[in-house]
Every structure is written in structure tokens, then in C-alpha cells.
Image 1 (cartoon, helix red, strand yellow):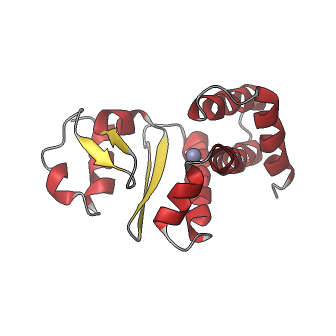
Image 2: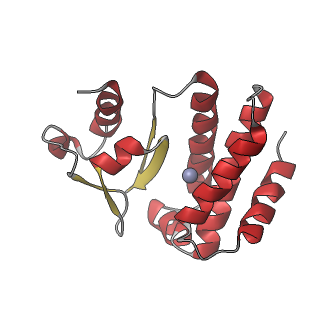
Length: 162
Ligand SMILES: [Zn+2]
């Protein structure tokens, strides 16, 4: 088992999914919310993930990333936890996140927070990182949101960086 997987199973094993974790395979489904499921294989490919089930929030960051990216992704996921806390329940946040505007704002805010952290730490190619993050948001939104709208939303949150 790769290091990546071990960390993933450890993060998930702490939660409600313990019984299925022992038998988890690439294609084992993990319930992220009432409406969304992903496979372990998909989870393992993510740089980071945070999800909220019931009243519990889980975060996992890929430990094989370089140190600046680990901090970037940690800050991104911490922003999602902060966003969850603005809502009365996981279900309420998840419902907001399922709307196009909710997903755009949540991800733009989180990617901007991570990008600002990378800037602070001296990431060598910030323009490339920004392009990568705008593309990630574009893909997460299903590919129909104008890239200019995504850029404006991202910049709005970058302007708020400290
Ligand atoms: Zn995110």
C-alpha cells in the first residue's frame, strides 16, 4: 500500500466509515454527503479534500506534495472548514455548495486563500499556479461558467488576502 493510501485510510478511519475502510479498494465508494459519493481511487488522486458528514468534518491533504503545496492545500481545506462553520449544519452547507454560485464562491475563496499562502512562501511561478487553480474551478463547475467570471471571483478573494 502506498503512503498516499495509508494517510487517506487513516483520515477516513477516524470517522464514521470505519467498517468499510478495512475492506476499501480503489472502487469502494465513500459517501461525502447525502447526495454525493466518490471512490477511494478518486479521493486518493486529490491534493486535498474536506467533507462534512452529519456533524463531523474530515480533511485529508496529500502528504507526498512538496512543502509549499502542502501548506497551500492545508490553507485551502481550512477555508472549507471555516465555510462549513458559517452554516448551521453540514447539510445546509452541502446544499449551498451544490448551487453553481455556492460552488464558485466556496472554491474561489479556498483556492485564493491557498494561492495567497503560496505567494507568502515564495512559490516560484504564481501565474502558472493561478492558471491551474482557475482551470480546477472551471472543471469543478462543469465547464460552462465563463472563465472571466471565475477570474473575477478569484481576484475578489485574493484582494482580501492578508
Ligand atoms: Zn476546494
